[in-house]
Amino acid sequence: MRYFDALATTLNFRRAAEAVHVSQPALSAQIHELERHFGAKLVSRSRGASELTAEGARVLPRIRAILGEIDALEASVGPSAAHDRTVRLGMIPTVAPYLVATLLPRLRGDEGAAAVELKESVTANLLTDLRGGRLDAAIVALPIEDASIAVRPLVEDRFVLAGAANLRAGLAPPVRQEAIDPGELLLLEEGHCLRDQALSVCSLADDRRLVGYGATSMSTLVQMVAHGMGLTLLPEIAVAAEGSRHALAMVRFADPQPARTLALAWRRGSHGGPFEALAETIAESARSVIADGAEWIRPQEA
Image (cartoon, rainbow, N blue to C red; front, top):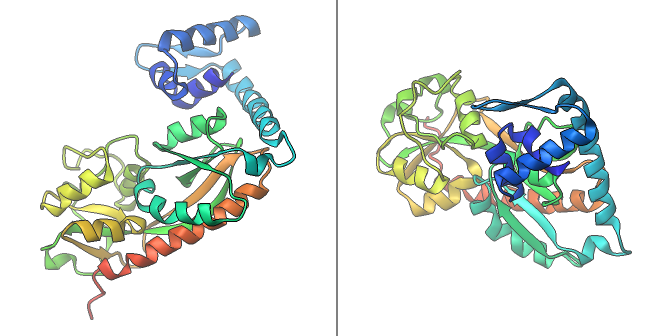
């Protein structure tokens, strides 16, 4: 059932196998076994991609509900299970490098806090691991459209426009979104939710007008921008760290300023109390990091 859940999320046998840490033939064999057990075809296979059949789509919510109940049962075993076991926390790559240094001391300082294991990955992989019980919670960007996942918004993370230190005067703050030339815009590679958010901010239905290359990490992206290779949208949570490392000019957008909402996600059905407390600690840490970045953003010109 966990393999089927991963396949239903990725709709790709290779990526599903990677998400659950098994070989592709092993995953495929288990999907065949599940179909044999149900006596129905659950996945329609093709060379390029896969999709759920009507039967597969029908059983998926019930399978996810069963997995959630199993995970909730395991998490509740023992009188002090919430404190005795390690909390496995995931983070998207555009948050983890900037939040960890502030968050971990706060978590370790909480009385009775559980030990924490961290995993950094893109949203699709984090949600697969969350549903599969390999993570307890994950910091992601909304929206998350999955009835099996509970979310608690943490903070609004506004975007700023970042370029080389000699960013042209024509982009003095506040910048209007329509003033950005898509031909100058550098983004992370496909698979990162920040790429989709940036495309939405710039009202681009597709990426054919963008610069023909991207970066696999925010750090690489910022280095490219700092050396005059283009512009990018930088979330506020990254401003303090990247502003202290690189010669950048960062300006705010005109109101309403574009933003993403960071949230803590966990399996619905798990006891929510510990996650609500964890969410509050994460939110306080994120607000602190964002506030530290204010000095690096060019003030609005009169």
